[in-house]
Image (cartoon, rainbow, N blue to C red; front, side, top):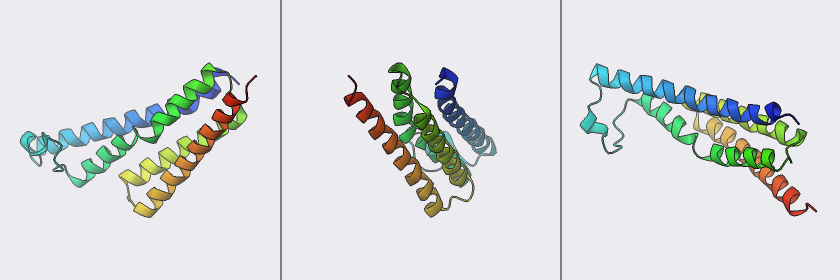
Length: 140
């Protein structure tokens, strides 16, 4: 498996995080510039941002939950040379779930749909970790 095939899903997840961050930053600047938010209203993480800005902020924060385990696993798979077709396929399923989850989060924010996408991604990631752990523990 080529390094590009192994790391491309990780790169897409990183790009997703930066896209959400840039949208959030733009919305926060708009909130400040319009006077909708003052620094003393949010200095201690008070929830006084506009609803739209909060949606992006929550989606951004969510990129530092499950994806962290995905980043670690991808690096471990690469370093130990255990990444194969199954890993890459599951990595893409995970990343697609993350993209769809983020899209729902910042658009309709339908909680059941968002939760289902989160759950599928979490399950796929758990399966990826179980496969990796078994592979490592059964190495000779």
